[in-house]
Structure formats: C-alpha cells, structure tokens
Image (cartoon, rainbow, N blue to C red; front, side, top):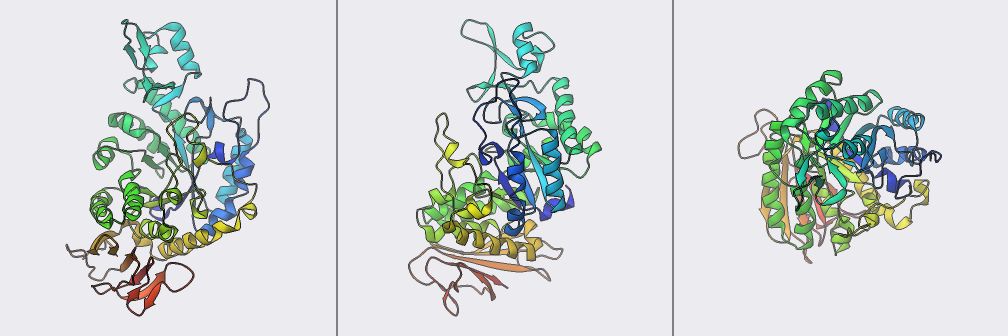
Length: 447
C-alpha cells in the first residue's frame, strides 16, 4: 500500500450530478459540454475543509448515470473532453490533491461497442465471450445483467481478454493523472480476477491505491484473495448512524470491535455518507447528534471520505425507484460562496475534526478500545499502534486520544480517567462543568 494513503482524507463527488449534467447521454454529434471546470472552482473549498483527495464518481462516457459505461477511454461528453481532464488534473495537482477514479468493471452499458457486437455475432463470438450468458425460460441464451438492471450487462471475468482490457484502462488513466481506483461492485467480481489484473497495473504504477466497493461479504478475505488495498467499510457506516439514531451505542461498540479486526489487515475506506445512500443528516432525527457521527468517523482507523454536501448538512433520501438517487446527487452552485449560510456551522465542525486528525496522523491505523458503554454514553480510546502497545490496548510510549459521546438529556461524568480536554462539540465548550460532558455533546481528551 502506498504511504500517501495513510494521510488521505477524501472529498467524494458524483460529477454528473454535481455539475448539473443531463441524465442521459447527448445525441451523437452533439457538442461537448465543458462541465469539469465547475469542479475546478471548488478545489480551494476542498483544501479549506482539510481534505487532500478527490474521490470521483464516474467520469467516462456512459448512457445515463455513469455506471452504464460505453467508452472507458473517453471522458463523458456531458463533462468535457481530454483537454478539460488535463486542466482539472493540473489544478488538483497544483493544490496537492490526489484523485481516485471510479472504475465500473463489473458491467457495461448496452451501448458499449463490444456488447453491440456480441448481440450481433452471438455468445460464442469473440465479442460474445466478453459477457456472461444464461438460458431464459425458453432455453435461449441471453446476457446476464447486474442485480436485475437490464441496462447493466455483466462482463465475463473468466475471459483473459477482459482482464487485459481492464488493466489497459486502469493504466491509461493513471498515466493521465489519477492516483488510484475505487472498484465499483467489487463484491460481484471474483477475487482472482484482480490477481490477473493488478500485477500489470502495479508494475506500471507501484504507488497506486486500489479500493473495492464491498457492501457485504468477507472484507478481509476479499482483500487478501484479490490483492487490492482496501474496501469500503459499510459495516461501520451503518453503525455510525443507526446506533446514534436509536440511542443504542452498544451496536457501535460491537462494530468497532469488528473494525479493529479489519484495520489489522488493511486501511478501510470509511465514510458517513456516499452517492448511494440516504444522507446522514436525513437519518439522524435529533440535529444535536449529527456531529457525534463525525467525531467517531475521524477518531477511528481508516482513510475517511466526506460525501460532498454532507459537510454542509445537506439532506436527501434515497428511494428504491428509477431516479431514486437524484435527491442525494444534487447540482452544486458555481462557487462555495453561493451555498446557504445554514450549512457553514456543520462545515466548521468538519474542519475542526479533520484538523484534529491531521495533528494525529497515527489515527489512520489507531486501535479502538471501548472503555465504557451504555445506550446513551460511549467512552472510546484511540491508541496508536506503535511497537510496545499492550494487548489490552493501552499504549506504552504511544499516543492515546479518548472520545466521549453523550446522547442523554443530563450531563455525563465518564467513570474512567480520560485525560486533558482537547476538543468539544460546537463553538461553545461541550463540558457542563469540569469532568462533565454536557447533554447531547461530545468531547475529545488526550490521555
């Protein structure tokens, strides 16, 4: 794994929605729409937030939402062209921002030229062998699709030509300025496929970082078997919002034990929101508890990502229907100065917590230890995993931060030593009195 990944904090963007692109590909011959410049105008905002990486959703030519790719080697004409991409990369590089691309290598759109040829020439043709086929009710072979979506045709990952092509695509965009890849729907792709692809990619770009989308499954096993560097930590995502929403911090405590196990084997991509889920500001019904989610996110191991808009408290509910993602993939204004004033306090809380993490870079590989937990209270230690750390989790010559969460209506006195106060929730002191955490507040201590 590249050393730079330990210091990466991502701002996650869904470019087609962010830039206000149309929801379907333009007609052939239509002029290119140069929307990537819209993203360039937000780079200073990303730096001021404290992030140093851009996790981009799909940017390649597709039919609708970006996940039905029709040309992996072409920037989506709704976003721009090669010159726009080069300008965007140069702008990001000038500000020290890394770029992670979204690689949709489980399936393609029906308009992909290889699939068009497969339909014309049949399953046993050279193009046909790029895809998976199964008999329908009449015994006729038809192309398999991803999770029932007819517009997403499943690639045949057993075909070496597919592996060679994916490696070619990955290297092409790494050559063009990307630093790594998020592998969409990795949970649906056999792990050994990446064992064939990644040696070629890493030979050309040994400093790249590869993270797979794993919603479910054996996270550690997939990392070990595939050779990728990381996966998306959906278990932690779910516990972050549901344990706080339900005032059941036992769920979070249990999940953090699992998280420790994952972090021993890889650097998880952690997040409180992304382009596929309801925003956590729409899930947490008590707004006093929104930043409790963030305090945990930035105090535990991983490479954290902030989904664009979450740092402003954006709301949006994902619905299981056509167009059901639109509410969580909105268009952003031309510049940050046009954002509503109501969101800036949440932005500042992100800044403060990201700043804390920047000052304690060892948190990327911290070990979490639950020192005390009830339904409404959690005392969580984050220990540096330096040589000499004890099996019980307390550091010997290492560093320790302690996070205290209080979801209750009354002040909370931690029943264990926590140390010197470092940071509290809100602009005001989150302590009710020395040694007491205010109602519905959180605080970080240095032990």
